[in-house]
Length: 105
Image (cartoon, rainbow, N blue to C red; front, side, top):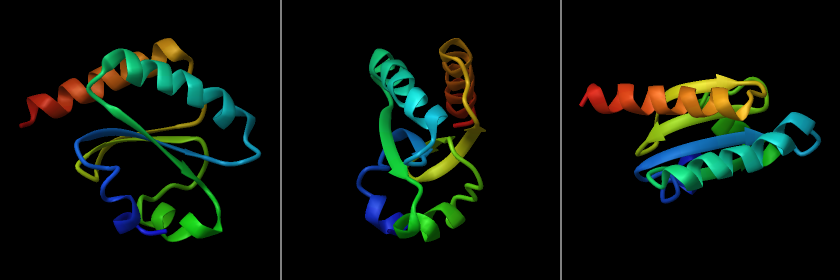
């Protein structure tokens, strides 16, 4: 899998959740991120599984551990967060980073 394989999914504002199959924190994080993104309505959630088929993609994105959350605009990373975070913290972080990105335009 390469960035081109995800090109269509990464159009617009996206929250990319990179997780591992056996990662308990990753499994706990996914429904939290889905809830936050659904409530916002302006951001799409994209899931990428960290495995052998996505190694090149993860290297290009400089992902070194899971879970990693990437905020992207048209495939360009503008914010990242690693490790499990509580819902309230994630929501505040996401709001702040998206507002910061909008103000830079």
